[in-house]
Each structure stands twice: as structure tokens, then as C-alpha cells.
Image (cartoon, rainbow, N blue to C red; front, side, top):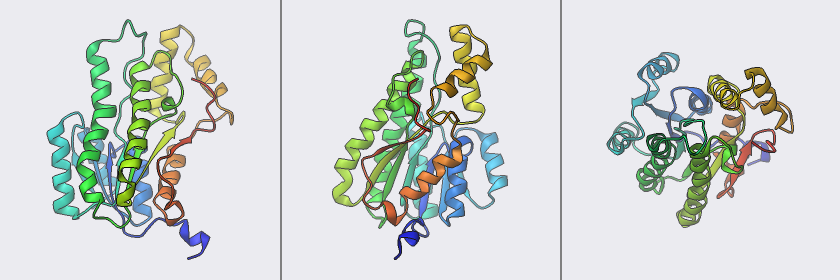
Length: 262
């Protein structure tokens, strides 16, 4: 196999993506579908799922609230019964969490962010590992954030979960290597789209500056002076599912244009 051929994802991968009906998750799903994978997404939003099914007819899409252990278990029941196995888990579901000082963040806001961003990733991994051990190309991909390598003022619940995801990933890479399961994390930076627009708007309100000024401040933090796209993240995800990445595990890989600080 040539080096160029090794860059193509393994054929026929069975991929499960949490939070996969919209945003980065949808772009990841589209990329895997284009590569010939059998994709199953789950998402909490029925409207997003309806739009996803219309756009990608025949692709398996399940409604699930990832903060609910029973609903995650139900997703894996669907995976076993309708797909028959799993090669790639993309632990993608997450929320932005609150914007505010630590003294203003409520216990409920903190717990919701932890439950959705971190505990759900544990639960998906818990159910996925027995299936991944039966795969010839087992890979677990955790979607974290550049906030998993930098401090992030006014966003402490979010940053705490993203740092924890990196620790979870590195521990699982060590734990599962003997089973030939690779585990990595992607750390997207400032990603173009409605979600980032909302983050910028909330931070501008928090510190009392115009939204346009806050947007420019975010760009100033990036060495390449541009936001990344969800497609940039998906391209790296596909690479990690290729023979070229067969010895890449335990890595927290930033896709961010080099965000210097937050």
C-alpha cells in the first residue's frame, strides 16, 4: 500500500457519532458517509434529526439525551441490533455551558455542563469498548476543545470538562492499547458558525464591549488570524481513521490555527 493509499480511511467503517445531527457532528457524519462508512448518529433535537434524515436518507439517526444513562444504553441497543458492531466511536455531544464569573454560576449550570460534556463521554466509552474490542480497526475519538489546553476565564465549567476529556482520553489510550484500540482527542479552536456566534455575543455582554470588538479580539488570539471550519475538524477525524494513523493514539490534536490564549 502506497503512502497516498494509506491516507484513505479504512473501508466500510461502522461509525457512531453522539450529537451528530447538527453542527460539527453533522459535518463529521457527512465526511464519514462520503468515505463510505456506515454512520449512526444520535441527537437530542428532534428538529435537527428530522433535517438530518431528510438530508441523508437511509442514515441511522436516533433521538437521545446524552445526560440520561438509559437513553445512551438504548442508543447502543440500536447499534448492536441494526448495525451489528462498531469500529469508530466519535464522542462529540456537548454544550457551551454558562458564561459568567465562578461566583455567579449556579450548581445546576455546573452539573448540566459536567453531565453532558464529560459524564456522557464516559458512558459512551463504557458501552462502546466491548464492541470496539471485536473490531479490526477500533478507534475512539473524543471531541474536546482548545479550552482543554488553555485556561478560559468566564467559562470555567466548559474548560473544566474539556481538560477532563483529555485526561480521560489519555487514560483510555493506555488502558486499551493492548486491545489494539486507539484513542485520540481533537481540540477544535474557534469554529465558524452559529454556536461560536452565541459564545462571542455572551462574552461581549459579560465584559461590556461591542460584539464586533469581541469577534476581532477572538481573531487576534489566533496565529493564523482566521477561524477554523467544521470541515477542518472532519478532515482530521478521517485521517485518524486511516491506515496512516495506525500508530497514532493517546494524542490531543489541536485543529485551531494555533490559538495562543483565551
